[in-house]
Amino acid sequence: MSLIEEKLHNKLHDFLKGHIQLRRPVITDIFERKLYISPNDIVTDFLKKTPFASFNPGAIIFGNEVWIFPRLIFDYYSYTSSIGFLKINMDSLLEGEISKPFKTRIVIWPKRLWEADGCEDARIHKYSDKLLVLYTGNGYYFENGKLKKRAVQGLTSLDSKLETGERKYFSIKDGDELFTPRNMKDSAFIKISGNRATMLTRPSIKDFDVCWRGVAELETPSLLVETMEPVLAYEDWEFKVGWSTNTVELSSNEYLVGWHGVLKEDYSYRNGLAIVNEEGDLLAVSNYLLAPRGLYEEYGDSSLVIFGDGLVLYKEYLVWVGGVSDYAIGIFTVELEKALEKLKWIKG
Image (cartoon, rainbow, N blue to C red; front, side, top):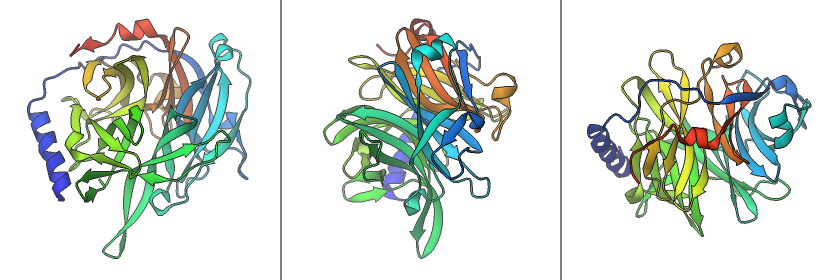
């Protein structure tokens, strides 16, 4: 175990030892199902026009459009993912006047060893004149002459033509030492200033998966170990938790974010909301507010899953753009005020 991993493990041990239950195992599903997008509703610019699966999309609002960045899979042999782009008029969505299919362009696909098995689960953040894209790079690295598997937190950008910039992945930094966990994903930017960003992330530390915060240097890119702290733990009925979405700014020091818990009883992914400050400290958290229900959501390539990755505000609505059981996309809406009423304040 590296010295960095040992430091993080010690922080995690102290956090879990002092953990007090914040949530209950209850579902209050407040979201209205506005639209499902099946793989058959997607037409891409790839030679294989229609994917086998389209799910776990990132999202961002531009004017009256929601830009959606789904994870696309075109074969089940190696299950290699790419990230596409489509857009939907929000007023048409809310009024139920959507025409299909959706013209979709593939914008990110594997080009590096560390993402060779797929570019997955985009989270979108607008910064300056570009879109920053956090995504999971599912791939490999060499260690002692052997090729080994690893999932890293990838980072790239998209310009006005949706062309990608440089691709990098995050490590954890302590002085001159760097450590890359075997699995680090489920990240979101809170606030960016120059080369530094406050972030939410989820590194796997000795097989423990909880929600962390930290400060990152983007040029490297790397999270600074001294700034990293666990902030949201799994409860007794769960075996892991993670951040589900990008953050949404509510005020100068309050940011809304989705999270998920994975249940021991059935391996289902159930989702809630949290509010953090600009440092990533947990201010408020809900019980489960969005969980799979019915045939469309409970059955799929990975059953009983609603996961990620897009959270946006439009007019008075909070809109969750998520993956449905690893095969389709669901768009879920609720009035923002109704959602905020369901959060329990811890600080502030």
